[in-house]
Amino acid sequence: MKIAGDWLARAGTQSVLSLLTGAGHRAYVVGGCVRNALLGQPVADIDISTDARPERVMALARAAGLRAVPTGVEHGTVTVIAGGAPHEVTTFRRDVETDGRRASVVFSDRIEEDALRRDLTMNALYATADGTVVDPLGGLADTLARRVRFVGRAEDRIREDHLRILRFFRFLAWYGDPAEGPDPEGLAACAALAEGIDRLSRERVGAEMRKLLAAPDPAPAVAAMAAAGVLARALPGADARALPVLVHLEAALGPQDAPDWRGRLAVLGGEDTAARLRLSRAEAAALAAIRRGIGDGAAPAELGWRDGIQGATAAILARAALTGTPPPEGWQAEIRRGASAVFPLRAADLPGLSGPALGAALKRLETAWLADGLRPGKAELLGTDFLPPENPL
Image 1 (tube, rainbow, N blue to C red):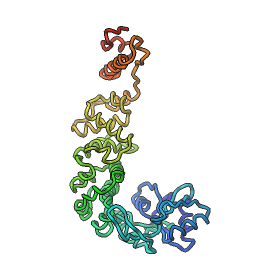
Image 2 (cartoon, rainbow, N blue to C red; image 1 turned 120 degrees about the vertical axis):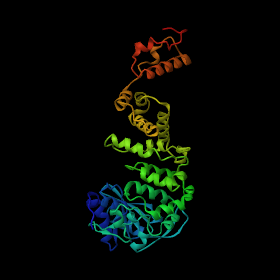
Image 3 (spheres, rainbow, N blue to C red; image 1 turned 180 degrees about the horizontal axis):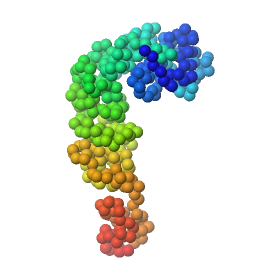
Image 4 (cartoon, one colour; image 1 turned 135 degrees about the vertical axis):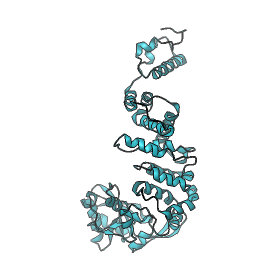
Protein backbone atom coordinates (compact mmCIF):
# COMPACT_ATOMS: atom_id res chain seq x y z
CA MET A 1 0.00 0.00 0.00
CA LYS A 2 1.09 3.55 -0.72
CA ILE A 3 0.27 6.92 0.77
CA ALA A 4 0.40 10.27 -0.98
CA GLY A 5 0.03 13.93 -0.16
CA ASP A 6 1.46 17.35 -0.84
CA TRP A 7 3.40 17.16 2.43
CA LEU A 8 5.26 14.06 1.18
CA ALA A 9 5.78 15.23 -2.38
CA ARG A 10 7.13 18.67 -1.57
CA ALA A 11 10.77 19.33 -2.24
CA GLY A 12 11.76 19.96 1.37
CA THR A 13 10.56 16.58 2.64
CA GLN A 14 12.04 14.74 -0.30
CA SER A 15 15.38 16.49 0.14
CA VAL A 16 15.67 15.37 3.78
CA LEU A 17 14.83 11.79 2.89
CA SER A 18 17.19 11.76 -0.09
CA LEU A 19 20.16 13.22 1.76
CA LEU A 20 19.92 10.23 4.13
CA THR A 21 19.19 7.49 1.61
CA GLY A 22 21.74 8.95 -0.82
CA ALA A 23 24.40 8.45 1.86
CA GLY A 24 23.48 4.79 2.28
CA HIS A 25 21.09 5.10 5.22
CA ARG A 26 17.49 4.05 5.59
CA ALA A 27 14.96 6.85 6.07
CA TYR A 28 11.18 6.75 6.47
CA VAL A 29 8.43 9.18 7.35
CA VAL A 30 6.84 7.74 10.45
CA GLY A 31 4.00 7.92 12.94
CA GLY A 32 1.25 10.51 12.77
CA CYS A 33 1.90 11.69 9.23
CA VAL A 34 1.57 8.13 7.88
CA ARG A 35 -1.46 7.37 10.06
CA ASN A 36 -3.27 10.56 9.06
CA ALA A 37 -2.49 10.09 5.38
CA LEU A 38 -4.03 6.62 5.54
CA LEU A 39 -7.14 7.97 7.27
CA GLY A 40 -7.55 11.01 5.04
CA GLN A 41 -6.76 13.40 7.90
CA PRO A 42 -4.63 16.57 7.64
CA VAL A 43 -0.90 16.15 8.20
CA ALA A 44 0.77 18.79 10.32
CA ASP A 45 4.08 17.48 11.64
CA ILE A 46 6.57 15.42 9.67
CA ASP A 47 8.68 12.93 11.59
CA ILE A 48 11.42 10.92 9.94
CA SER A 49 13.05 7.78 11.30
CA THR A 50 16.49 6.62 10.21
CA ASP A 51 19.37 4.33 11.09
CA ALA A 52 21.77 7.29 10.81
CA ARG A 53 23.10 8.57 14.13
CA PRO A 54 22.32 12.20 15.11
CA GLU A 55 25.82 13.48 14.40
CA ARG A 56 25.68 11.92 10.96
CA VAL A 57 22.26 13.47 10.28
CA MET A 58 23.58 16.90 11.23
CA ALA A 59 26.68 16.54 9.08
CA LEU A 60 24.68 15.42 6.04
CA ALA A 61 22.15 18.21 6.47
CA ARG A 62 24.82 20.89 6.71
CA ALA A 63 26.62 19.47 3.72
CA ALA A 64 23.37 19.79 1.78
CA GLY A 65 23.03 23.42 2.85
CA LEU A 66 20.19 22.75 5.27
CA ARG A 67 19.89 24.03 8.80
CA ALA A 68 20.12 21.31 11.46
CA VAL A 69 19.09 21.97 15.07
CA PRO A 70 20.09 19.50 17.83
CA THR A 71 16.67 19.60 19.51
CA GLY A 72 17.10 16.29 21.33
CA VAL A 73 20.41 14.73 20.38
CA GLU A 74 20.56 12.68 23.59
CA HIS A 75 17.33 11.01 22.46
CA GLY A 76 18.43 10.81 18.84
CA THR A 77 16.43 13.74 17.46
CA VAL A 78 17.66 16.44 15.09
CA THR A 79 15.32 18.99 13.52
CA VAL A 80 16.20 19.65 9.89
CA ILE A 81 14.72 22.77 8.29
CA ALA A 82 14.01 22.24 4.62
CA GLY A 83 11.67 24.19 2.37
CA GLY A 84 10.87 26.41 5.33
CA ALA A 85 9.39 23.49 7.30
CA PRO A 86 10.81 21.55 10.27
CA HIS A 87 11.42 17.82 9.92
CA GLU A 88 12.17 15.91 13.13
CA VAL A 89 14.69 13.24 12.23
CA THR A 90 15.17 10.59 14.92
CA THR A 91 17.53 7.64 14.98
CA PHE A 92 16.06 4.16 15.44
CA ARG A 93 15.91 3.47 19.19
CA ARG A 94 15.05 0.82 21.70
CA ASP A 95 14.17 1.23 25.37
CA VAL A 96 16.51 -0.24 27.96
CA GLU A 97 14.94 1.15 31.14
CA THR A 98 11.75 3.03 32.08
CA ASP A 99 10.32 4.51 35.27
CA GLY A 100 6.71 5.05 34.20
CA ARG A 101 7.36 8.60 32.98
CA ARG A 102 10.47 8.52 30.79
CA ALA A 103 12.69 5.93 29.17
CA SER A 104 16.41 5.43 28.79
CA VAL A 105 17.13 4.54 25.18
CA VAL A 106 19.97 3.27 23.06
CA PHE A 107 20.27 3.67 19.33
CA SER A 108 19.42 0.76 17.07
CA ASP A 109 19.94 -0.29 13.47
CA ARG A 110 16.65 -2.18 13.27
CA ILE A 111 13.32 -0.68 12.32
CA GLU A 112 11.58 -3.49 14.20
CA GLU A 113 13.14 -2.41 17.49
CA ASP A 114 12.15 1.18 16.81
CA ALA A 115 8.56 0.11 16.14
CA LEU A 116 8.37 -1.96 19.32
CA ARG A 117 9.06 1.07 21.54
CA ARG A 118 6.09 3.02 20.16
CA ASP A 119 2.81 3.20 22.04
CA LEU A 120 0.08 2.25 19.55
CA THR A 121 0.20 0.10 16.45
CA MET A 122 -1.28 2.92 14.33
CA ASN A 123 1.72 5.04 15.34
CA ALA A 124 4.22 2.34 14.36
CA LEU A 125 3.80 2.77 10.61
CA TYR A 126 6.57 3.95 8.29
CA ALA A 127 6.69 4.98 4.64
CA THR A 128 9.46 5.45 2.11
CA ALA A 129 9.95 8.55 -0.02
CA ASP A 130 7.63 7.18 -2.72
CA GLY A 131 4.87 6.51 -0.14
CA THR A 132 5.28 2.75 0.19
CA VAL A 133 4.03 1.78 3.65
CA VAL A 134 6.33 -0.30 5.84
CA ASP A 135 4.43 -2.12 8.58
CA PRO A 136 6.66 -3.99 11.05
CA LEU A 137 3.92 -4.77 13.60
CA GLY A 138 0.61 -5.13 11.78
CA GLY A 139 -0.47 -1.57 12.44
CA LEU A 140 -1.81 -1.07 8.92
CA ALA A 141 -4.83 -3.33 9.47
CA ASP A 142 -5.52 -1.69 12.84
CA THR A 143 -5.33 1.79 11.31
CA LEU A 144 -7.65 1.03 8.42
CA ALA A 145 -10.12 -0.55 10.87
CA ARG A 146 -9.74 2.45 13.20
CA ARG A 147 -8.68 0.08 15.94
CA VAL A 148 -6.67 1.78 18.70
CA ARG A 149 -4.42 -0.94 20.08
CA PHE A 150 -1.23 -0.91 22.12
CA VAL A 151 1.97 -2.32 20.68
CA GLY A 152 2.55 -5.73 22.24
CA ARG A 153 1.24 -6.25 25.77
CA ALA A 154 -0.82 -3.25 26.83
CA GLU A 155 0.28 -3.28 30.48
CA ASP A 156 3.95 -3.29 29.45
CA ARG A 157 3.46 -0.21 27.26
CA ILE A 158 1.64 1.64 30.04
CA ARG A 159 4.25 0.82 32.65
CA GLU A 160 6.84 2.40 30.35
CA ASP A 161 4.92 5.69 30.48
CA HIS A 162 1.63 6.13 32.31
CA LEU A 163 0.72 9.04 30.04
CA ARG A 164 -0.11 6.35 27.49
CA ILE A 165 -3.32 5.75 29.42
CA LEU A 166 -4.56 9.20 28.46
CA ARG A 167 -3.12 8.87 24.97
CA PHE A 168 -5.13 5.67 24.50
CA PHE A 169 -8.38 7.55 25.13
CA ARG A 170 -7.26 10.60 23.15
CA PHE A 171 -6.51 8.47 20.09
CA LEU A 172 -9.76 6.58 20.64
CA ALA A 173 -11.61 9.93 20.46
CA TRP A 174 -9.82 11.07 17.32
CA TYR A 175 -9.28 7.88 15.35
CA GLY A 176 -11.27 5.03 16.92
CA ASP A 177 -14.40 3.45 15.50
CA PRO A 178 -17.21 4.36 17.95
CA ALA A 179 -19.27 1.38 16.80
CA GLU A 180 -16.52 -1.03 17.83
CA GLY A 181 -15.65 0.59 21.14
CA PRO A 182 -12.25 0.47 22.84
CA ASP A 183 -9.87 -2.47 22.56
CA PRO A 184 -10.75 -4.73 25.53
CA GLU A 185 -7.14 -5.50 26.48
CA GLY A 186 -6.15 -1.85 26.29
CA LEU A 187 -9.15 -0.72 28.32
CA ALA A 188 -8.52 -3.35 30.99
CA ALA A 189 -4.86 -2.35 31.26
CA CYS A 190 -5.78 1.33 31.59
CA ALA A 191 -8.22 0.47 34.39
CA ALA A 192 -5.71 -1.75 36.19
CA LEU A 193 -2.94 0.87 36.09
CA ALA A 194 -5.01 4.04 36.42
CA GLU A 195 -3.28 5.06 39.66
CA GLY A 196 -0.17 5.73 37.59
CA ILE A 197 -1.82 8.94 36.39
CA ASP A 198 -1.17 10.37 39.85
CA ARG A 199 2.56 10.27 39.10
CA LEU A 200 2.29 12.38 35.96
CA SER A 201 2.92 16.10 35.87
CA ARG A 202 -0.19 18.24 35.68
CA GLU A 203 1.14 19.87 32.52
CA ARG A 204 1.22 16.52 30.72
CA VAL A 205 -2.25 15.56 31.94
CA GLY A 206 -3.64 18.95 30.95
CA ALA A 207 -2.13 18.77 27.47
CA GLU A 208 -3.73 15.37 26.83
CA MET A 209 -7.12 16.46 28.15
CA ARG A 210 -7.13 19.53 25.90
CA LYS A 211 -6.39 17.40 22.85
CA LEU A 212 -8.94 14.76 23.79
CA LEU A 213 -11.76 17.26 24.37
CA ALA A 214 -10.97 19.00 21.07
CA ALA A 215 -11.89 15.84 19.11
CA PRO A 216 -15.02 16.06 16.95
CA ASP A 217 -16.89 13.77 19.37
CA PRO A 218 -14.98 12.87 22.53
CA ALA A 219 -18.06 11.62 24.40
CA PRO A 220 -17.64 7.84 23.80
CA ALA A 221 -13.96 7.97 24.75
CA VAL A 222 -14.66 10.04 27.88
CA ALA A 223 -17.44 7.62 28.85
CA ALA A 224 -14.94 4.77 28.55
CA MET A 225 -12.49 6.76 30.67
CA ALA A 226 -15.12 7.17 33.35
CA ALA A 227 -16.02 3.48 33.30
CA ALA A 228 -12.35 2.52 33.65
CA GLY A 229 -11.79 4.87 36.60
CA VAL A 230 -9.39 6.99 34.57
CA LEU A 231 -11.47 10.17 34.43
CA ALA A 232 -11.68 10.28 38.22
CA ARG A 233 -7.88 10.13 38.40
CA ALA A 234 -7.30 12.80 35.79
CA LEU A 235 -10.11 15.07 36.91
CA PRO A 236 -11.60 14.18 40.31
CA GLY A 237 -15.29 15.00 40.60
CA ALA A 238 -15.89 15.07 36.85
CA ASP A 239 -19.18 13.73 35.49
CA ALA A 240 -19.35 12.71 31.83
CA ARG A 241 -23.11 12.23 31.51
CA ALA A 242 -23.91 15.62 29.95
CA LEU A 243 -21.05 15.57 27.44
CA PRO A 244 -22.86 13.64 24.66
CA VAL A 245 -25.79 16.06 24.96
CA LEU A 246 -23.42 19.00 24.52
CA VAL A 247 -21.77 17.40 21.48
CA HIS A 248 -25.22 16.87 19.96
CA LEU A 249 -26.15 20.51 20.56
CA GLU A 250 -22.85 21.64 19.01
CA ALA A 251 -23.46 19.48 15.94
CA ALA A 252 -26.91 21.03 15.48
CA LEU A 253 -25.23 24.40 14.90
CA GLY A 254 -23.63 23.09 11.72
CA PRO A 255 -19.97 23.09 10.69
CA GLN A 256 -17.64 25.00 13.02
CA ASP A 257 -13.97 25.83 12.84
CA ALA A 258 -13.28 23.78 15.97
CA PRO A 259 -15.26 22.68 19.02
CA ASP A 260 -14.71 24.70 22.19
CA TRP A 261 -12.89 22.25 24.46
CA ARG A 262 -13.30 24.69 27.35
CA GLY A 263 -17.08 24.41 27.15
CA ARG A 264 -16.76 20.65 27.18
CA LEU A 265 -14.47 20.84 30.18
CA ALA A 266 -17.00 23.08 31.93
CA VAL A 267 -19.70 20.45 31.38
CA LEU A 268 -17.50 17.74 32.87
CA GLY A 269 -17.02 19.77 36.04
CA GLY A 270 -14.44 18.55 38.51
CA GLU A 271 -12.52 19.83 41.47
CA ASP A 272 -9.93 22.60 41.11
CA THR A 273 -9.87 22.04 37.35
CA ALA A 274 -7.66 24.97 36.35
CA ALA A 275 -4.88 24.05 38.77
CA ARG A 276 -5.17 20.32 38.24
CA LEU A 277 -4.79 20.65 34.47
CA ARG A 278 -2.36 23.57 34.67
CA LEU A 279 -4.51 25.80 32.52
CA SER A 280 -3.04 29.10 31.44
CA ARG A 281 -4.47 32.27 32.97
CA ALA A 282 -6.44 32.95 29.80
CA GLU A 283 -7.79 29.40 29.69
CA ALA A 284 -8.70 29.46 33.38
CA ALA A 285 -10.48 32.80 32.97
CA ALA A 286 -12.44 31.51 29.96
CA LEU A 287 -13.43 28.36 31.86
CA ALA A 288 -14.54 30.41 34.87
CA ALA A 289 -16.62 32.67 32.62
CA ILE A 290 -18.37 29.70 31.03
CA ARG A 291 -19.11 28.17 34.42
CA ARG A 292 -20.43 31.52 35.66
CA GLY A 293 -22.66 31.73 32.58
CA ILE A 294 -23.98 28.25 33.28
CA GLY A 295 -24.89 29.04 36.84
CA ASP A 296 -26.04 32.67 36.92
CA GLY A 297 -28.88 32.39 34.41
CA ALA A 298 -27.81 35.48 32.46
CA ALA A 299 -29.67 36.05 29.20
CA PRO A 300 -27.88 35.38 25.90
CA ALA A 301 -27.48 39.08 25.12
CA GLU A 302 -25.87 39.77 28.49
CA LEU A 303 -23.54 36.81 28.03
CA GLY A 304 -22.58 38.06 24.57
CA TRP A 305 -21.76 41.51 25.98
CA ARG A 306 -19.88 40.05 28.92
CA ASP A 307 -18.02 37.12 27.38
CA GLY A 308 -18.06 37.56 23.60
CA ILE A 309 -19.67 35.31 21.02
CA GLN A 310 -17.50 32.24 21.63
CA GLY A 311 -17.71 32.31 25.41
CA ALA A 312 -21.43 33.07 25.43
CA THR A 313 -22.16 30.30 22.94
CA ALA A 314 -20.22 27.81 25.07
CA ALA A 315 -22.11 28.89 28.19
CA ILE A 316 -25.57 28.66 26.60
CA LEU A 317 -24.88 25.22 25.12
CA ALA A 318 -23.32 23.93 28.35
CA ARG A 319 -26.28 25.23 30.37
CA ALA A 320 -28.70 23.49 28.02
CA ALA A 321 -26.74 20.22 28.19
CA LEU A 322 -26.60 20.22 31.98
CA THR A 323 -30.24 21.21 32.53
CA GLY A 324 -31.71 19.10 29.76
CA THR A 325 -33.58 22.08 28.31
CA PRO A 326 -33.12 23.57 24.83
CA PRO A 327 -31.45 26.95 24.39
CA PRO A 328 -33.93 29.87 24.28
CA GLU A 329 -35.42 30.84 20.95
CA GLY A 330 -33.27 33.25 18.96
CA TRP A 331 -30.34 32.87 21.34
CA GLN A 332 -27.63 33.14 18.69
CA ALA A 333 -28.94 36.44 17.37
CA GLU A 334 -29.20 37.73 20.92
CA ILE A 335 -25.60 36.78 21.63
CA ARG A 336 -24.47 38.66 18.53
CA ARG A 337 -26.55 41.67 19.56
CA GLY A 338 -25.02 41.64 23.02
CA ALA A 339 -21.48 41.21 21.70
CA SER A 340 -21.85 44.37 19.59
CA ALA A 341 -23.61 46.42 22.27
CA VAL A 342 -21.89 49.30 24.09
CA PHE A 343 -23.03 50.58 27.48
CA PRO A 344 -24.27 54.10 26.64
CA LEU A 345 -23.01 55.96 29.71
CA ARG A 346 -19.60 57.20 30.75
CA ALA A 347 -18.38 59.02 33.83
CA ALA A 348 -18.74 62.36 32.04
CA ASP A 349 -22.48 61.73 31.78
CA LEU A 350 -22.78 61.96 35.59
CA PRO A 351 -21.13 65.33 36.36
CA GLY A 352 -22.66 65.61 39.81
CA LEU A 353 -20.87 62.51 41.11
CA SER A 354 -17.29 61.55 41.79
CA GLY A 355 -15.21 58.89 43.53
CA PRO A 356 -16.98 55.84 45.01
CA ALA A 357 -20.40 57.42 44.51
CA LEU A 358 -19.72 57.75 40.78
CA GLY A 359 -18.57 54.15 40.51
CA ALA A 360 -21.58 52.88 42.44
CA ALA A 361 -24.00 54.88 40.30
CA LEU A 362 -22.48 53.63 37.05
CA LYS A 363 -22.64 50.07 38.35
CA ARG A 364 -26.34 50.42 39.28
CA LEU A 365 -27.13 51.92 35.90
CA GLU A 366 -25.22 49.17 34.11
CA THR A 367 -27.12 46.54 36.08
CA ALA A 368 -30.40 48.20 35.12
CA TRP A 369 -29.31 48.35 31.46
CA LEU A 370 -28.46 44.64 31.48
CA ALA A 371 -31.70 43.71 33.24
CA ASP A 372 -33.64 45.56 30.53
CA GLY A 373 -31.99 43.57 27.77
CA LEU A 374 -29.23 46.09 26.91
CA ARG A 375 -31.85 48.29 25.21
CA PRO A 376 -32.19 51.56 27.20
CA GLY A 377 -30.32 54.54 25.80
CA LYS A 378 -28.53 57.32 27.63
CA ALA A 379 -31.59 59.52 28.16
CA GLU A 380 -33.67 56.67 29.46
CA LEU A 381 -30.97 55.55 31.87
CA LEU A 382 -30.40 59.06 33.20
CA GLY A 383 -34.10 59.28 33.95
CA THR A 384 -34.15 56.15 36.12
CA ASP A 385 -34.34 55.87 39.87
CA PHE A 386 -30.88 54.33 40.11
CA LEU A 387 -29.09 57.62 40.79
CA PRO A 388 -28.70 58.62 44.44
CA PRO A 389 -31.32 61.22 45.38
CA GLU A 390 -28.77 63.35 47.22
CA ASN A 391 -26.96 63.95 43.90
CA PRO A 392 -29.69 64.82 41.38
CA LEU A 393 -28.60 65.73 37.88
